[in-house]
Length: 165
Image 1 (cartoon, rainbow, N blue to C red):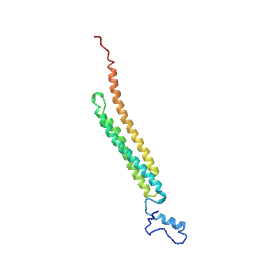
Image 2: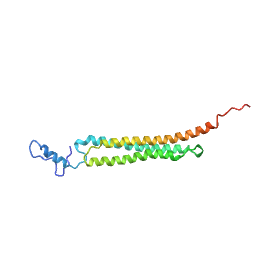
Image 3: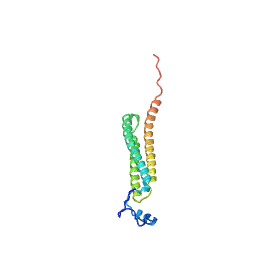
Image 4: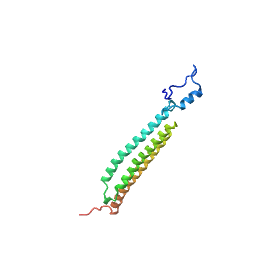
């Protein structure tokens, strides 16, 4: 265990060790962000924050690849707009990034105030998943809309009839 009180280790006034009141007063004066009783909270918070960062990076990479490939097959004749593809990817990647930054700030604020922070990171991770899912739905609707438009246009012209020769 690491002691970080400015005046040294815990008070040692009696041979049996410090009393409960002396020890509590000393612990309140500590300056570390990682007190021994909070290690599990800090580890779970960091793991959730890292998971959210990985999710954001994956959303950015997949969003870039998806927008480039969808926009390549999109033209004005098909009636699709690359803006909706870009909007879905931006919702997923940008929203996840913003939620991640807010979550990190709130978690560090909880650490400074010596409060539990795992639940902040858990809520942030769940919100990031929700935003990435929402962006994926917007992107998929843009893809379905362009595919449905081209299908209805070809169905409106009627099936090709074989000609007798």
